[in-house]
Amino acid sequence: MLQGVILASLEDDKAENVVALDLAGRASFTDRMVIATGLADRQISAMATHLEEKLEEAGLKRVQIEGANGTDWVLIDAGDIVIHLFKAEAREMYGLERMWGPDLDETANEMDQIQPV
Image 1 (cartoon, rainbow, N blue to C red):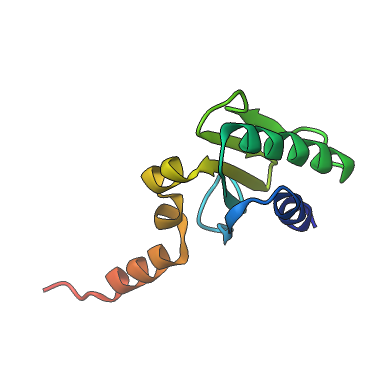
Image 2: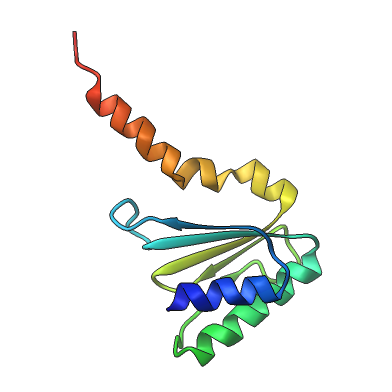
C-alpha cells in the first residue's frame, strides 16, 4: 500500500527513472527501497515534501527526511520503505542500484556455486 502511495506521488511530481527494489531478507534496515531522479534541487525538495504529506495522509505518522534543504540527495525513511531522491549526477556516483539491485543476487549465487579446489 505505501509503495503505491510513494510511486503515485513521484509520478505526479514528474520524477524520472523510478526504481523499486525488494530488499526483504537482504537488508536489516528496510524491506523496500525506492530510487528516483529529479532535475533540480527545487523539484527534489518538492517531491520530498509531497511524499511526507501523502505518507502522513496514508497513516504513517513518523517520516524521517534527511537532506531536504537543497542537496543532490534526499533520503526519506518511511520505515519499511526507504526512498532516495537524487539529482542525476549524484545517483550515478552513488550507484545504489548496483549495490542493492537484483544483479547483486545473481553474482552472490554464482559465487556460492564455485567449488573450492
